[in-house]
Amino acid sequence: MQTDEYELITQSLAQNANAYGELVDRYKKAIYYHCFVLLHDEDKAEDIAQETFITAYYKLTSYDRSRKFSTWLFKIATNKCLNEMKHSKRTLNVDDEYFDTQHSHEQLLRADDTQDVHTAISKLRPEYQTIVKLYYFQGSSYEDISETTGKPIGTIKAWMNRAKRELRKELV
Amino acid sequence: MKDIDDMLRESTPTPKRELSANFTQEIIAEIKTNPTQKPASNKFWSSIASGHKRMATALTAMLAVLVLSGSVYAAPQVIKFVNAFIAGETKQADGSRIVAINMHDCGVATNLEDVTPSETWYYWVNKDAPISNDDVAQIVQAECELSTLEDYVVVPQEYIDAGNSYTEGALNSRSTEFDSNIDAISSTTLTVTTKEQMYGQQGLEYYENRTRTFGAIADDVQVYSTTGDRIPLSDVVPGDHVKVTYITPSAPSASQPNDDANSIVIGIQKTSVNITQARAFVTYNNDYFYRVEPCDTDESGYCKAEQLSSQAELDAPSDFNLYIKESDAINAIKPLYELYLSGESESSIDAFKQLAAQPLLNAMDEKPISTLFCMGAAPSRLSYGVVGVDEKGDVLISAGDHFTVLDENKPTAIVHYNVEAKQITEIQCVDTATELQMYQDYSN
Image 1: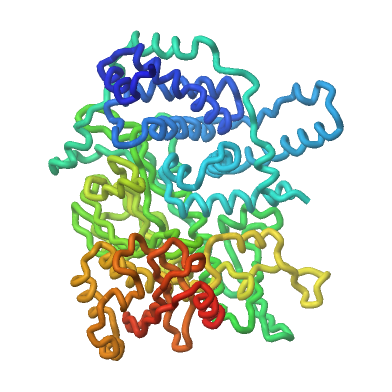
Image 2: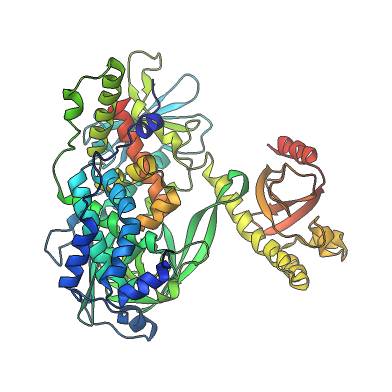
């Protein structure tokens, strides 16, 4: 039987590293995927996911138990990914291997579109990139994005419109 | 041609590999090696609750765009707003007009491939649009200012308390919407009224006036003028329009509203009169006003600017004045209905008497409140909707005790509310969905 999350957090606060490891196991895939969607880089996503869990462990005393643990984790992860995006000047590394192997004409066209989309997104401000990726790739609602980023919904919607306006110019 | 939404959704990336097998073990090893690295302390919020006076420089806040790796403080950069002025007007045969606006370094413009700084912008204005050329210039300038300000919002990077460091990830940093109005301010507390976009039944969107009092102001609160200059807190006075940034012990949720009493204001950005004024106009409705560019393909000499067409997607209403009136009406009526719903019938009658116009009160002749509201004896929930505007200009709000007003054969009250007089002038009971639909068709 799974140990209650509340109990795992209590044990983690008592510096039970194995209990915290169980919490990590519960959320590691979700956080990894979340970071990958934002960073589009498996290695970076894994690094940031690990940093997220380590930061969360050290900040566990500041976690407010009336809120969902997962929401708090995602907020830390989002901030770390956003910092990475702001500090990294590298351009998006769309998987070149895809184009080296044989694919149907339709597949190549689709891949071409995908590359264009990701390139266009990478030209947006990091904040815009974040909300576009969370909304379209992660399926997050405006409310979720507001919660995760700490920005009012009105701001999220305004940014989304501006981001889409810029993307439309690039892509359509 | 594919829609942009479809293109984005079809481009969802998928990682090419799973997490490393030793992902969790590495984390456990790290925290076992350094079990108490950077300990956090719950003194942070308890110090606020006890009214503990924080030392100056406890908070490190800076402009988001100026964050430098490793730096603690950064000098604020003066915001250079656009300076929009009317460069000319061309009357069109159909009575509409083209207004040329001379822009300078507008942040929005720099995102457009075909527009360079200092270029003249052209706007088509409908002959019936209730906006002057000065209004157009102000609206355009406000749009640019908003775009610029979003880059200059105070963002907390670190909070140091009792020797403990709280970095951005551990803080709940939030901001009010732009254009919050200062109601009261002291050296320790701040009260503002915000217009917050709410979502009602049937997709209804409206502004709800909310008064928020923040329980603390950081000693080193970052206050900026409309031009981005750092100013003292004493320069902020009631009546100012601002955006407030604060840190809060917990993010709001449906079950847990904003904990403003325990929140700390860390940044105040004054917003210009342009932004305030512009919101009173129809800014995004293509029927009244949109951006054009000189072209040869249209006999008018101007074509609709392609890059601006997406502005129509913004959530701003087609008629901002009406939108505000509808919001004001809902804000006035909603508490009355909620009081009734809570079972406080006597209080409901008293509250109603405060709102009702005298002729309506006379006509009611002490009828029971349940009849007044067209409802059953024990409504379990209420829904609101804007039905339209009557011939006198009063806003019509529907209110019923069921989830949607059109799908059930239950009575609904149509409340006529005069926004200027702040009075309910009339109430009608509508018994069927068909009847309500007819009412809507008529009023629209």
